[in-house]
Length: 260
Image (cartoon, rainbow, N blue to C red; front, top):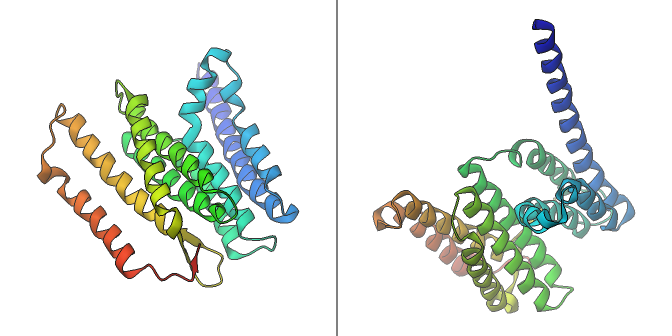
């Protein structure tokens, strides 16, 4: 019996180690190949291949698996496209992206608590919207609007499913439409903040949607906790915080180095 337990623990340890190594390789190779080749195709293919488990079931469950994997897919694609947008010469931002993606794959993505579901969703909103904003400069506005609809739907669905919401699809579709509407209204004034020569950048729209999503998740959590009843005092802080951040960004930080 003792030998069996030892063998099982050893196998679990080896399995965990292999999981870490494979995720590290995915983070390094997907971004490194993007920089070296000057193309995002290899990186995106690796991201898609890494999601093989989505299709390793009966086809009736493919749509369900795709919906549950949207947040992870958005984050992975965002890392690759951000690396592509940063250029074909290795910059500090590329190594930051590699490390950040590895942290996502190894430490953040596997977590399944309600708190981490919110964190995962907010990361998807921040990275996905920043990526969509950058590529809006070389594409039609419909790309940005469609991307934001998908991002809003994915983030909301990710949190609501984790909270066992009865109608996550309907609510998430509404959130997606709100994201798309905000993106459409912001399309003529898309702002990118850059950080020196590091290559790091952040979208104003991404920050706004992230803080608004945070407020939305806090309000939803309050509603679930108190059977649909919301006490303003319990959600006042996240609401005020979000409004203040949005106001400060619009009033004081609308003169960036790069304005699309």
